[in-house]
Amino acid sequence: MRTRLFLLFAFAAVTVLTNAASAGNIAHGVEVVVIDAGHGGKFPGAHYGNVYEKDLTLKVALKLGKLIEEGMPGVKVVYTRKTDKALGTDLATDLQARADIANKAGGDLFVSIHVNAAKSSAARGVETLIMGESPKERYNENALFENNREDLIDMSDERTAAIVRAYIQNLQFTYGEYSMALARCIQNNYLKAGRHSRGIKPQLLRVLYATDMPGVLTEIGFMSNQQELAYMKSDRGQNEIARSLYQAIRNYSAYVLGTRMA
Image (cartoon, rainbow, N blue to C red; front, side, top):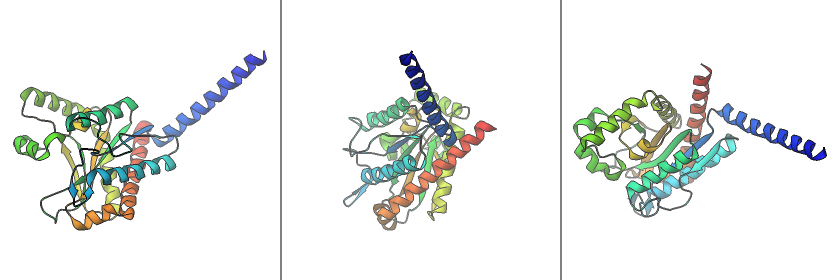
């Protein structure tokens, strides 16, 4: 009898705790946030002097994750990497590995953090990319692919291009609206922090194509711009960027809750 009562109490306690955790997640609108620090290991990304993109993205990613863990209890944070390491033998497998981590975790949203670079040192600002194709990409696919190399889907094969375009059309019925909502939240919070916004752009990114959830890739500034590079290197700059992304995720969560209640 005592054993049966103990088991009943234990089951009740587990049920209450599980329901409480679930309620906390529902209150936030999301349960699992996947944070992807772009590049890593033998794939450093852009670099100027002794500063590497892979290091800046990791610092911001870890700061963002900490803010979510502290400010959104009940929400699970999954990192594609927490150290300086590559996730594949080449860039294509590295990008797929990031998507695999996100999909296995059952992510509700995917945020990939990157740093921009340009030939002109005057280029500046922040932008957020979503999965899609712009008219410019349609008419200049070869040049675009050469410039972005392995980060983009190669659309030179007609069969591949047809599949990808069918997928993009299907996005409007699945994650497209949510990815755009997240991108808007991010850009709005960058603006509130005083950053120069370069807007939201569709791009044929492998990592977003392979993730089965709403997702964005955000460029947090230009390494080729000395002022922005100094900002991104500083603890203050990294904290402000992480705070903007954190607030964006909170805003996005509120948006998700709103759509569920509508």
